[in-house]
Length: 234
Image 1 (cartoon, rainbow, N blue to C red):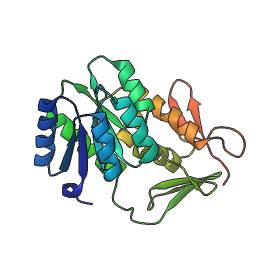
Image 2 (image 1 turned 30 degrees about the vertical axis):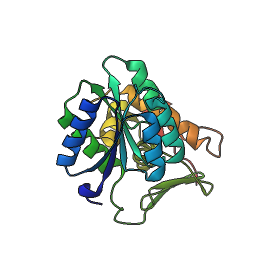
Image 3 (image 1 turned 120 degrees about the horizontal axis):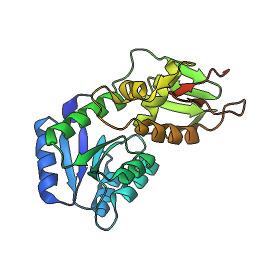
Image 4 (image 1 turned 60 degrees about the vertical axis):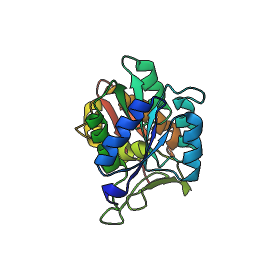
């Protein structure tokens, strides 16, 4: 899918910020819709889910956390970039726990946000893979062409970022990755963020994958380094 056809929903209650983001994204070739509140955002999401949502967490009424939670429950394939206030680390962690794929700290350069949008869409919603390869381990099967993960045949509702992270780990079973290596591989080298972001996504991913047939987690912690996907019999 070409970048010009990608649809973005900007959810921001401050009109000057919302319009600035819209203008920059439209200049970059994206199709952009706006929502000034959480309620309006949820209504638009139900009508026609976009490819990506730029979501301010501090919305009046239905806040960004609630929108993020609802979006992840109903449309896990939609990417989310959240807007957070500077130094609000708890906001970042909670947003990532709820399933956001990336974050940008206010005040921000709109060109940086546009670059983040491009990077997230490029890495999380890739064009169809060249072949129909599948990765498998235990009861898990990851399809590169269908862009989905199943366990015992049941579809798992992974976010695009969780899918990207699991793909990297499953492609290199038994290899220990540092947090920085996982950031580069699954988030991209242009991502500027806290390596602890990886911990949040691994925790969510483990909860969704459950246990392997041997009763242990698929992803194990390598103390002092990071994580690896265990060799599990299929």
